[in-house]
Amino acid sequence: MELRNYTSEQVQTIQAAFMSKVYTWMSGGLAITGLIAMYVASIEGIELMIKENMMMFYGLIIGEIFLVGYLIVRIQKMSAQLAGTIFTGYAALNGLTLSVVFLAYTSASIASTFFVTAGTFAIMSIYGYYTKKDLTSWGSLLFMALIGIIIASVVNFFMQSEMMYWLITYAGIFIFVGLTAYDTQKIKRMSTATEFGSEEESKGAIIGALMLYLDFINLFLLLLRILGDRK
Image 1: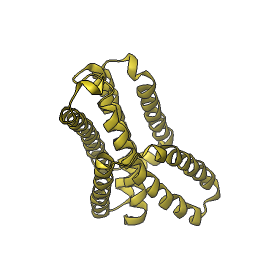
Image 2: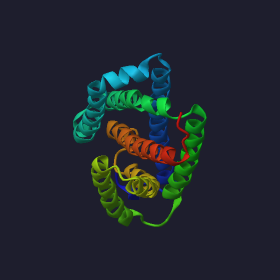
Image 3: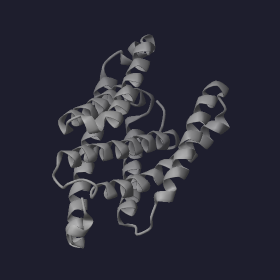
Image 4: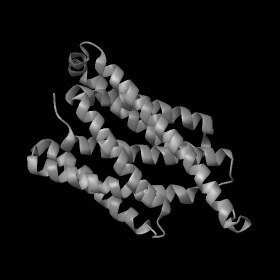
């Protein structure tokens, strides 16, 4: 879409409408994940069932990775309706795997951590949306840092170092706080890359929602390590 065909006011309106779609999809995904996680955790004997069926648990995680990868790689060749269905399915599967969080931590600490995460996410997303600073340079640095903590997490899975565990936790929080601002600005720019109201715009909103959804979930899980009270 050629920006010169629009006034600055029209561009702002288009951007706001696009971001509204993104946040609606993201909020819907979080709601599905949370409700399913709470429901599954409330099932009597579910903790024992998970321990006895770890292959199923890891299968769900693999399924989530497959859905995210498929959505990102095939988004241009699928309809917006299918993309939305895949995103919803991913959020539901994530609810199943995150049910273990509700089994491990108290409901009060999960709720308080959620509100802390929501507040932090909102502040950084607002910053990313309204700042005049170009955050493009953040992208490569944050991505490299993210790869670094993923590798460190795999290594620490075998080392079981408490110091490394906490270093990864705090580093991860800073990374996803930064990614929230960076991704918001990136998504805002995406709004003017396609025709307003088109199928491509709808698919772009779903991809944007997935990006912010992942930022929120990861930030929440990392903060829960610090703020959560185990049962």
